[in-house]
Every structure is written in structure tokens, then in C-alpha cells.
Image (cartoon, rainbow, N blue to C red; front, side, top):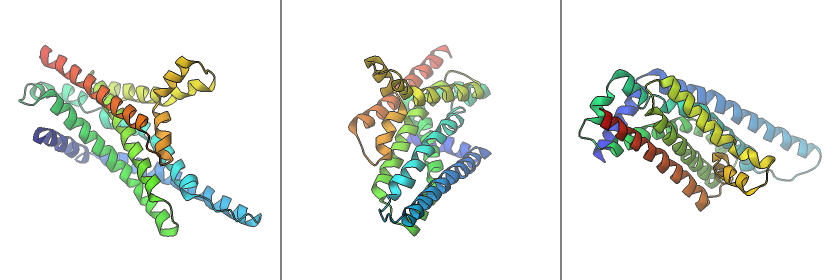
Length: 255
């Protein structure tokens, strides 16, 4: 565990010693802030319209504000995750330090887990920026914090799964741009797989739709933890890290 933590700290320091972390946080803060503002404005406007029409039916803040914001935040991850993972191994290969890393007395899985954990913590720090918006809801309203917490858990699991795949793709090239574009393509494909059920209801289409990360995040956005969704995300994380370990092992043999 000590080796994993050392590698994790090294990667985190490399993020925050460059403009990468601050640029990603600023981008995320701006876009997620706009989504929050838009959802809140729609919620307030609709509430005023219902009062003017004499309908005093209470509106759920979680359903009208929190859930749409979390769904939109997960979309932002499609752009953030490639920028987080593209340098993990591609930069090491470009600078030639990958040989020192794989010949050091550190196991492959420790290297993989250390870098992936650093990427996950970086992603969690970026997501933490959006909590500032959620605190506004508690200052002026009474949202239910439990579904909100479950939603953020879903964001972390979804991010962890895509980060694991991005880690693998970063081990396959020395070009960061190629790694980033490849990761974005994979993330986008896993995002739109559920669209196939809109025009095809056959069993094979349902199987493909099941592989979509959106399908498994929707219950989390509603505050529901389903075992099959947990298993799916954990399986993708294991699969991505397993491929990364095999790719790193091939580099070790070639060196």
C-alpha cells in the first residue's frame, strides 16, 4: 500500500504543480455553475407560474434541480476524463521515464492502482467544486441530502470506470493527444450505446444498451443504489485496470 500511495502522491503533485488541475476546475466550475443556475431558474419560474395559476402543489427540489444538475455534470466528465488520463503513461513513455518505472522494485498492479487512484482523486476534487452550488440549496431550501449523496457516489463510480479505461489507453501510446482522443471516443461510445433501444427492441439491442454508462447512472441520480449498477461499474474498473496491467507487463518484457 505504501508504494501505491507514493505513486498516487507523485501523480497528484504533478497535476497541481501545473495548470492542468486549475484549468479543469475552472472549466468545470463555469459549466456546472451554468447548469445549476439554469435548473434553479427553471425551478423558480415554474413554481411562480403554478402559484399564479392557483396550484399550490409542492415541487421537489431534488427532482427539479439536483437530478438534472447531476445528469449534466456526468456529461462534463466526457471531456474531463480524457484530459486527466491522457498523460498517466503516455507522458512517461514520451520522456523515457517509463523504463525506470517498470524496472523499479514496484509491482505492476501497484503502479496501475497508484496512477488510477490519483486520477480518481483528481476527478473527485473537480466534482467537489459543484458542492458549492449544492450548499446554496441548503441555505435557501430543504433538499434531501441522501439522494444527493447517492448521486455523487454514482458520479465517482462512473468516473472511476471511465478513468480505468482511459488508463489502459494511455499505456498503449506515447502521444498524449492520441490517448486523449481515444479515451474520449470510448467514453462517448459507452455514453450513447443506450440509444439503440430507441429504434430496436431485440434482445441483442438490450444487451448493448446494458453496456451504456448512462443506463447505470440514472438510478443513482434518483437516489437509488442498485446492486447490478454497482457490479457493472466495479466490473468495468477491474476490466480497465486488468488491461492496463497486461499492457504494462508487455512493456516490461519488451524492455
